[in-house]
Length: 408
Ligand code: SF4
Image (cartoon, rainbow, N blue to C red):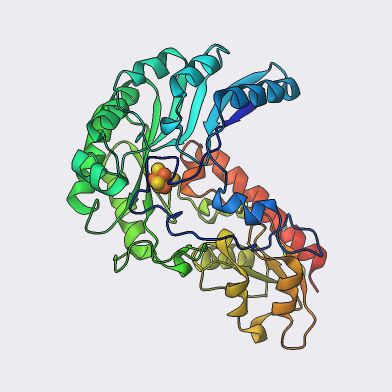
């Protein structure tokens, strides 16, 4: 069984009826090449870390192109497809030929998923039935708030009542994972509780809350911070408390990013499983693992339990996958071993990382670790606890093997 991805192209903000006030792609200008694990060893910058990360497509592809690409991909994957996911840089609900697209994909009689939509492009509630009739089985849908006035103001949604009516209908018929970026003083507190109750009554499978980030260290790496001048943000702990409390209050699953998924105990659910921890390989060598400030204490605990004597070093950036060269420049080099392991997905060119981390005259080897050590809430939303634990076992086993292979 395989999975077919249908990419509509499109540009965030521009191909979704104008920017939401909180969109992380707002104010992005020009293109910088961060460097990443896909770059050639002698060249900083590749398509992924220059264009892909900012979703720098030109515009929506026309239906003909989408259909041709889908057909070509089908020939590669074969007939044995168990789901089709519609995604894009722009918002699928704003795709000009959305009805025809859904009909075309629906004719393949395979469950359809929409990877993410804000619903801003839905002006007519009847589109919900069209989607259901054509096999839509799962959608991730931004609710932001159940109050249409807030959607209108903060999401730039010209027809918020229709968008919420579509969400309402879908909740009753298919698997809906709602999403909301939480902005203090706007859609948190009582408003958020009302939104949870609204979704719960309608039968949503879950709600994923995303803490609003407004600073570079919180993850805005495209040179566009602040997104909203003067806007207050939740600390990671405050946000975690809100997510945990709401998940206890409502039967529907509620999780949050960066922390966490309380129903599963992730990220790093393995820390609650002593028997599984014992199955991980022992750490036999010394190497410094560099990571983001949120994950660092968790990773340190797992590695220490498996015998590591080296320190995990945290950078100022909260999210490991968004570490850039600037973060490495802030590391105290005296704390580093001779071998340093970077998060697999960090946006740093290997050669540059080595130069920065050897600036004190110690020639350090820089190695890439695994892409993921756990499932963030966006990933874990549709997963079972066993699946998340398996992901963590795989991730940590790969990390420890890397330490044992390259360490001193
Ligand atoms: S719908 Fe998503 S990508 Fe489009 S402006 Fe809003 S937050 Fe940005």
